Length: 73
Image (cartoon, rainbow, N blue to C red; front, side, top):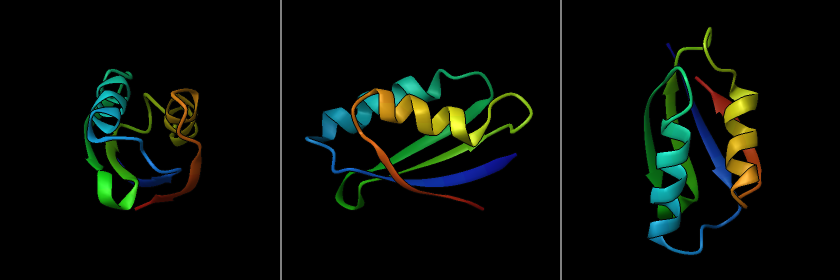
């Protein structure tokens, strides 16, 4: 299991981050998502054998929130 904190362009509203959490949460291998509206970050725990961090970044960017700095931990 891997965890990444992804910083994005600012979210327009709290419901936007909830939508992003929901879409990312449906990716195969994603265990959990936690959006942080005030800091424009999403924490994602995932199985790196089922989904790659790049796929998570692309999914978030495709929703209109370009990824600024992913950090895998």
